Structure formats: C-alpha cells, structure tokens
Length: 159
Image 1: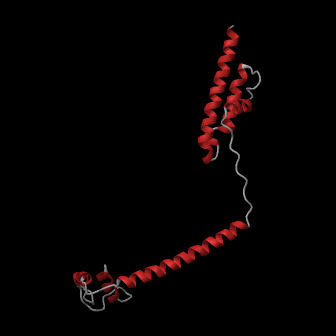
Image 2: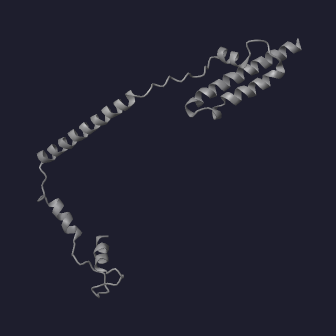
Image 3: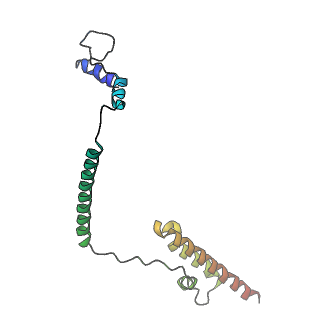
C-alpha cells in the first residue's frame, strides 16, 4: 500500500508518470522486514517507569474530565422536574374482573364484547414495549375470567 502511495506521488496531475519509467517502483526504498527486526531487536526501549507515569497522567486527566461531566449532568438534571412513576396496570384477577365488569351479573352475549374491548385496550401488541409482559399476563387472566363466566352462564342455563 505504501508503495502505491509513493508511485502515485510520482505522477503529475494529468496522470502521466514523470520519471518516464514504465515499471512502478517506489522512489524511497522501504524494507518492512528490517523495520520489524529493529522493533524486535531490543534496541528500542521504553522505560517502564516512563510508560507508567504517562499512563497515570492520562488516567488522571480522564478521571478529571469524567468528574466534570458528572457534575455537569447533575446540574442539568437538578433543574428538571422529576417524572411521577408510571402506574402499572394491575394483574390481580379481582381487579381485572372489576375492570371487565364481571363484578355484577352479565349476559352470556355480552362476554364476547367484553373480551374484544379489553383486548383492544390491553393487547400486548397495542401497549408500550416495557409493558408487553404485563399486558400478556393481563390478557391471559382476562381470558380465563371470561371463559369461567361463560361456563357458569352455560351451567345456569342447563339447570
């Protein structure tokens, strides 16, 4: 890749080579293996203490910068009003029965309408993502309560 850059620098803006040489050779000889040998030879040394001092200095700078960011965030959040906690819909069967209207006698024909209207408002696909698990439980409880009410209504008719 470096060879390509050296060759490209030899070309003029028109795209013709200035050297007149048809072979693409870099103008500066560069031997990758000699550089690798030099790095591994041990002649280039980095003092452990120098490196550690630079590391500590960089860490202190980062710590100071992080502390400043935290202080700035605290100041920004101090001016905001705290949001009231979201009240989660109940999963208690008694509360869902009251919500469905099963706390008083219901006709068997009304149970299907109750199921549809409850599903319209509470189906997991229609609520916020963080409430989907709760909505699924609410739907299961509501379906169970409505099915139970249907069985009771059918048992009352058969007698």
